[in-house]
Image 1 (cartoon, rainbow, N blue to C red):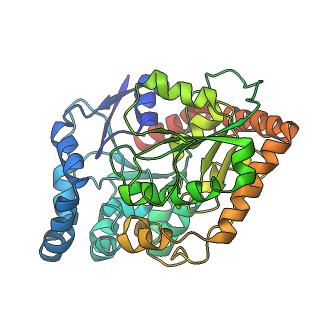
Image 2 (spheres, helix red, strand yellow):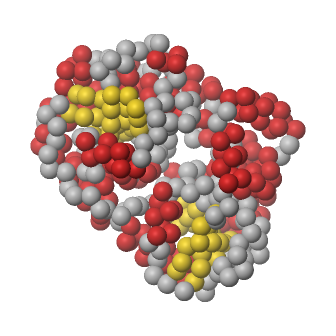
Length: 382
């Protein structure tokens, strides 16, 4: 039994699932010492701390080295291989890096920090100890090819994440269509980048209000609460036990995700619960949402800086959020049309529901992913 030591800033749900259901012949060891890292993540959500970091620490220190120091962890002696979820490894032991978001995540999702430390990142990825670089989307691969040598590109493995399909196919839909929107509970600022404004704008439209109910589990900034009428919306602003969150998926008919980056776990969970997905065609999304197969892809706004090198790292900037506060009328109209298509055509709703479930089980199945991952691990240790 070979042992894979996995560490990073934190673990996505699918990484935890992988630890419970590893490839044959492997054991996944999770970095259990996450208390310090958890405190760092909590501090990063405090506005004053973010201000100090942005205006002082980043100006005088190379935070790339600070971040790697904070999130690094020496692997156990009996670990055969290290699997990092975004952090550059300095240990002289075979390692694989899995890029969860964009390649800029190797520098804390900071484009300028990425460029500043590109030489260090290249050196680490070109090392013989770095065996493979797992990417989740084709868009991530395009960014890698923009900045790295052929030696590094040869190490790329396109391997979308997946989850075990364990929910029954949805056969019954609510008479009044239930639309689900999920955002951040801890960070109200993420409301903007996840498409919260677009969602509220859509549900101002009378034709939508008459046919559809909206469930929002997120923290809405106070300034937005003062701008919109939230009556009639089921708003959940607190953490939910996993059973209650599962009930939200089960009680819903469609998942709405008009954000400006892909949110992989909610896409996977939506397909698991047979929910068609309506999403903006932005970074990484089309690897999981196929137009007219398991949902609808909507052209994103031309008013936002998404065709520049900094994207998608710039979606976390105040400038980007400020632009989002003035919604694009064309995007709102397109989102509304997609919702009404499903509200008015239950055969289409059922078709997308079934094909989405099939897409999860056949095209990006957990079993298929584990088979590929086993080959990657085997080759890394050969």
